[in-house]
Image 1 (cartoon, one colour):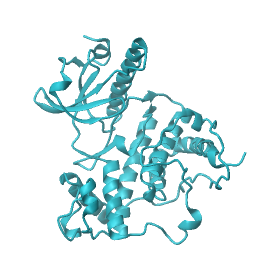
Image 2: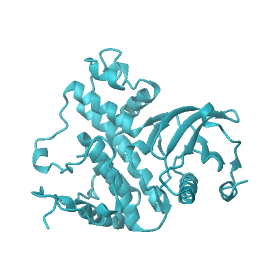
Image 3: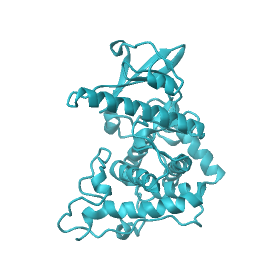
Length: 349
């Protein structure tokens, strides 16, 4: 039995030949496979070696990432946070066998809603938005922000003719952010339909025809969803409040995710938020690390979901503060400082 299996009291799984598994996703750090393990549909996450690294360094880093991932997943489950259950590990092939979550990423859900907004020509701006528009860096693209420590620590180079930067927003402690039971029920119904339909369509009662908004084919289709702006906002708000609540609980247990993006959050069939991908996670009490965790999430939202940027992150922070006000005061104060350092690129001097 390997050191990792002993450390976390896990079963050492038999070696699974990745060539015989169904690979459905590959990222920069590894591949994801679907298979059956002891009668259960599971996900096998395999980290591959990086040829540009020295073999000894590569082995050490890979082992560290696997250990961090398992520790983060287990710590979260102990704290009552929904994460995939870990069933086994295979150290020889750098594989983790874990629960297969049936749901959609928050990223995919928001992209479906964005498509509905575009198809229906719904304006997400209020009349004062042009004056209060939050500035976005010119290098923000369609991919998640590549945030490095030099940016957070204020070492980025200044750009010429920078735009003025508004101060970071901190949600009001008196703000009522809860959804009414009626709005919450409707939003949950939309999400349930979205999760049930593999093509990513919204409820039949709110669309004119059987139209799917997933992938390139959806962009060619001219049929539109009859979804009002308040309904869209309620769906986004429901998800945002869950994110804030989950992150507050995670940070209260001194768990730092390290890579908070909407791609690393899944809404399952029970409309519960599930956190995944803990390869960069840490167990630390540092307020600074918790603030940077939130900052990374904000940058991901600005980059990928800019159409929702005015409200989504404010709801996340408001929910974060509501769950643990004492912790939130310190973290959000540091968050404002981290954000100002991150805005150096658009400040004079």
